[in-house]
Image (cartoon, rainbow, N blue to C red; front, side):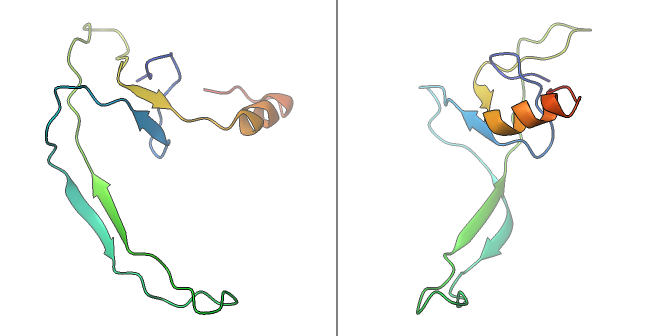
Length: 94
């Protein structure tokens, strides 16, 4: 699967989702809940923030059978430095 500009999307990639204007509500699943409040060593009285990790399934419409799906509402966030280092090491960025 590829993003709107052709970058390969792999599990764990960070994505920017450009939400359609007609999207009013989304159903998501809470997969991790952390209330925060743990002391951060060496940071004075600072504590960890609350974090809610969500999972969402997004059906992809308009794909052509036998062709790799490309999703027009998502763009993979890529660190250009890591891509350059991978190329220098002889790997190929995906």
